[in-house]
Amino acid sequence: MNETFNLPDGKDERRRLRREMPNAEALLWSRLRGRQLLGMKFRRQHGIGPYNADFYCPEVRLAIELDGDSHFTPEGRQHDAERTRFIQSFDIRVCRFTNHEVYDNLDGMLEAIAAAIRDHV
Image 1: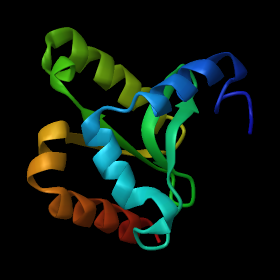
Image 2 (image 1 turned 180 degrees about the vertical axis):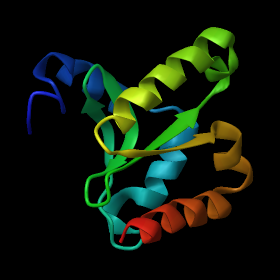
Image 3 (image 1 turned 90 degrees about the vertical axis):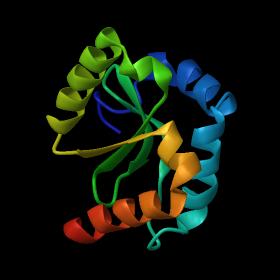
Image 4 (image 1 turned 60 degrees about the vertical axis):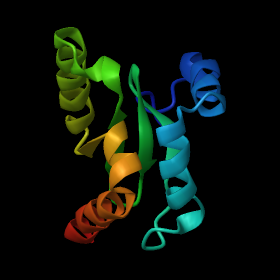
């Protein structure tokens, strides 16, 4: 790629994050992998500068972020806002969902992701 995406010094961390996915991420990944959603390819833990997007679809420049409990602290919210601004600076759209949405409304969440894809295509 280029000097912004999947930086070599973050490779081990991305691998660790893929190996140790939280349950919510694993569940969403089971529905995104293998081009199951509108034939789009998603990547797990895609490096964008100093950050790793939980899921990224390069064909439509869409990042999917799942937020667990640590994201709802003031520090977590600030970090997420900085991260989102950074990712968006590369003309990448960011869709954020909570882990609870994965468990309580996965089909609705997938429809929202599909709508974001359709808006771009």
